Image (cartoon, rainbow, N blue to C red; front, side, top):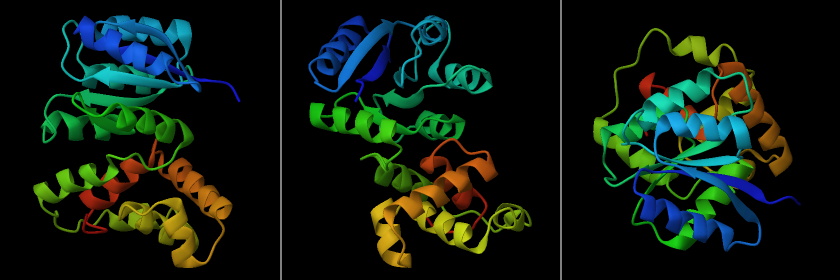
Length: 218
């Protein structure tokens, strides 16, 4: 199995170097480069095509949210993004998740959490901070149900709707499989179909979509 290719983008060079050393110390990862701002991050991604991008949200030249938007608009293979933040309950974190980040990490996260998040995001599994993302949504309150809710569910089969709602509640693939008596592989297939049909990039965007349309209580 090839190593997970990771890039680190942060304007604090000491922090970026520390993350690079942490990544390179893992047998199943390699750091393909670092950058100090969003513009340099786009160049790095174009040149190295990392699998996972650790992306600071507050940087000079181009911030993390704009960088995410540029990556989303790109036609090239896009990395899975982990947003880096100093403040856990930050509006920028939710903005990053809405823009396509698969997870977020605070800069004081333990090394084991950082490496576990990279592995889980790369594999398409729920990241350790998914529960914290749910907490951020809860703090915003549950919005009123809109007349757009059927647009989401009508695009899915009955089983896909079921899986969509269980993902939106924060359940892992294994938990979903046990709940609806399916194999893990079948659940993964349904999750991929949900993401494709709804034009979503990852599981956390399922959570956000369902919450904002009033389909579940986060």
